[in-house]
Image 1 (cartoon, one colour):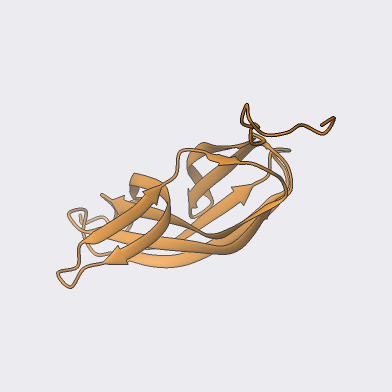
Image 2: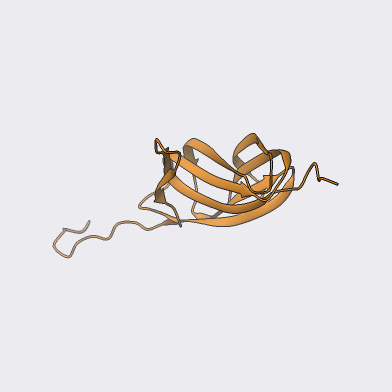
Length: 143
């Protein structure tokens, strides 16, 4: 009996600044993001990309990628994509692009990846506000 549907595994999920594809089909991820450090809030990220690779499945699926605020409930962005895997030896690569993302507060944001409403991965995106330090030779406000 041949299976007609096997839920895929998430081989990787990477948050980055840009995703490009070479002529040979290979992908280039630019600016892999572990955290965001800013001098002042609010701040707007021009573009955030989530690169997901699915493997070891059979069938048609629906991927959902969400950016969730530090309160754990507010969904800031969502991307939904449909994809298909013909065989467990095939892979599917999906890219979600979130443009003009405005961050109002510091804290730990979450990237959440689901397939057919099954949570496959949730990972943190810390955003830290670090005001610039004054150089020793700069005059202070009391000068």
